[in-house]
Amino acid sequence: MRGPRVLLGAVLAAALTVTGALALPAPADAGTSYHHLLRWAVRHLPVADETRAGYDRDKFVHWIDADGDCQDTRDEVLDAESLEAVSGCDIQRGRWFSTYDRVTVRRSTNLDIDHMVALAEAWDSGAKQWKPRTRKRFANDLGDRRSLAAVTASSNRSKGDSDPAEWLPEFGTCAYVRHWVAVKVRWQLTVDDTERTTLRRLARGCDNDVIRVERVRTP
Image 1: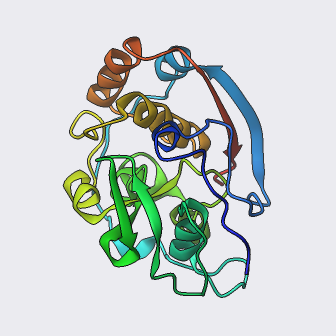
Image 2: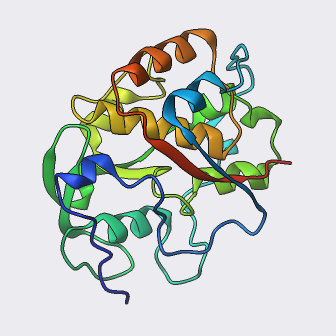
């Protein structure tokens, strides 16, 4: 079993590095590298109306054991984000820091793995046009640590499938905005007018850091 891949610490975890990724292979058909300042990136997100028509959570297959090491995607994230050593295929105990509400959790049953861009939101923003295998890759994206995060179940369920115009975490708003934009860019997803207006307003109050992303081709 791998040793723990410890994050920079509980406080720094709220601002996960914009360049990092879990130590797993990137998608085989990863696209071009992207690096632009946050406010530029927000301004240039493609805008389109959103529709939920035809959405079904089952169209995004998860959680899977992509690398055959006995840990599925949920447990890979738990392994990567635990602040102390964990073991086993089905991880039950560790120490996790939920950045949304700054709560430390010892039992994995109190955690959800949050899709930064919720599956329903991804569907609304372009995933409805993807092939099933692409939706599965999105739902299990371990190629960029911003895509998935272990957070308290209560904060994740408060978020639901909301975008930043509808929900923001109690803490770490700027990190959340950067991660949201990074995932939208990585998967070439659109934003609606209200979402982009909110992101532009929020970005003005954040450091104008460079967003670095390895974009994924979505045939």
